[in-house]
Image 1 (tube, rainbow, N blue to C red):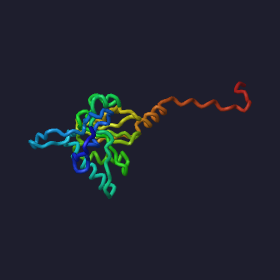
Image 2: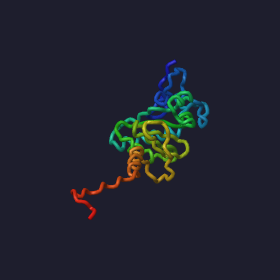
Image 3: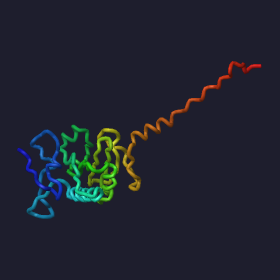
Image 4: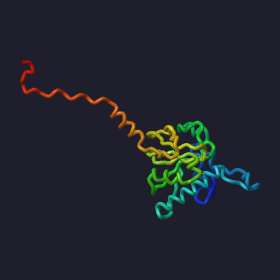
Length: 199
């Protein structure tokens, strides 16, 4: 059954946050659930703080660029089989409809990460930078700012100090450090121009 495209916030709809698995019956991330705060009404199953945060981040991106720009969601809610199939964390906030991966085609991913830190939902939640694949992971789970090493979905060690900037180019830096740790070969002895050192 095809999914009806319905607004879940001012600039996003349920089609954008739907699970990308091949199961046509899967509606994870796209369903509407009863709204506990408004009896008799329904809301998206995507976490309300996440949706508010995305709207705030989009507004900051538009302000930064100086015109209306999109924030494109590449991954929203995920069903457990799909999350496992793509190598997602077994405790991923995507499973709870509390995370998205996104990018803005008009901003470098590092700049989008800086803007996300200004949004309380993400500053106190999760911000993950994947420079290799040009996406930003955002969630409203426990505080966790990290980078993805290389091209995998595995998390790098968390940044423990919230004032520490997200380190980009981590794999390249690690290679440079490894190169400096290797001992430098001793210089070859200078030639004596045929003279014997013995007298």
